[in-house]
Length: 165
Image 1 (tube, one colour):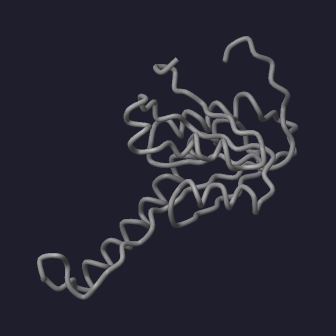
Image 2: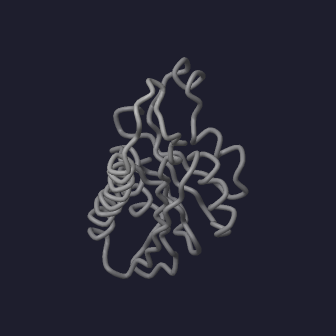
Image 3: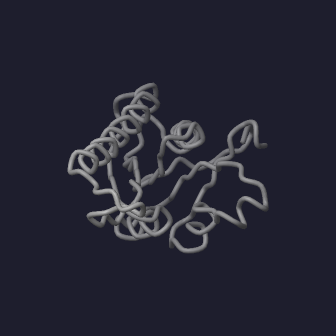
């Protein structure tokens, strides 16, 4: 978006972050284009963990799940949250220490959690990265960003990674 003069924002700006390079690029874009050193805005980093699987004592083949396997999956989820937030911190730390940052972690279906939290926080803007899915893949899998753009009450900016433009 070179050459575009966007108004620096004040309020709550939610950036949906995940494991992808696209979400970190969207965070960097947001900081470059929507924050200034004198900004009073709050940057809300939102990560959504997938919903926990529904366990029965037996899997489809009739083998029993152990508590260790369940604990390992839960530990992996927590480690993923920490990893994503550390990557996001590395991105925003390059933009100065005066940024107010709030970390929010939700759990469930990404599109529903993002829309719910954005509304609950009364966010002024939602920033999301684009995974660059083509028409067929988007039609089969759905697009979280398309869904959020249609359902949240605030403006949504979907940031395409440089290679997608």
